Length: 495
Image (cartoon, rainbow, N blue to C red; front, side):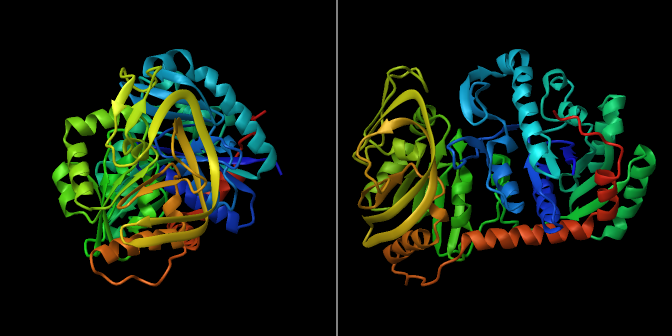
């Protein structure tokens, strides 16, 4: 069977393209198709490492899981990781090729990167029946269209049908759909075969006049109105979603994650937030840490700059004060590096400072270099003291994405000192037994009894994919969508 395509583009960022792509991956997997996700270019600080040590966007990992696939870098051949000052690290086929300003990338490199996009499309088209493709932002950003490689350039290259998505929860969805179509070139507008209204709350009957208006005004069918789905439980792509996360305000264990300016891989903490006894929040002011039972310093795309910033805004002072009073503190990746004595940067890869003082809460020092470490990790056993508890857990999985070599790390990948520990391992809290042991240690420090149950995060994810697929399938005109995908006059030109 020749590969078919369908592409979700949006009227803006965070309108639901990623989630709808995930849903269709599960829907068509359940129908027996060999289906894969694809996004030509991601700009995100949430990333993942494939089994062969290549880096890709986290959203495509969730989509691959929904399609029952092992994530592969072909699903996201171009990844941009913002580093600050309008610059990004550019990652092609899972490997960094340099750090570029926005102008350097858009004016001199993005069209070169499109060759990697075409190669990935060719490879996937040879292996799969259907590619569910996600765009980025909006295809109507006229200042970026000439060098855009993720929206209409992909659609036109494949002659792929496009479904345009708007978020009605934000307001202005009708204007956004009509305006986006108006700003497209005629050949681009012709590729848009349907509209989707996403995140609807309320009585659908009250929306029907607007649906009728849209169809008459645009000449495009509204393929569905997707309801607002509470507690999706699926990894997010953008840090914008941090503002939307629902916290369990009644949780007995209050966890504060310090919201760095360059915070990365916040999905590390979604599994903690989902625990019934946890109230997790992202702290933006030092005083918020006073009420926390546990403080977490997360990953950072620029450890040095974020370390300088938390000294300026007094977060560092507050963290040290509370840690010395006995409050538990955990550092992950960049946060782990900050907890040490020193950060050495002789080549000034992250800042203009060749050396910075860390928070001096762990007996480690880190030296940066141009090398980047990306690998999956399997830890046979961890055994260390944390607070008044002994943490012993076996067969842990995770992955590393970092620059810098840190002293004092053994095979357990964890450095601990009383009420403080740190690790480079992203995803470590996804290990069910380890996560519960850490939370129980904090509970004991509060004179709360331990909870003797363990959630199965992987099984929960699969249930969440099933739930999402069911809701979307019930609210999309699937017969019409399948006709657009499989019976339309769309030729496969990839390769």
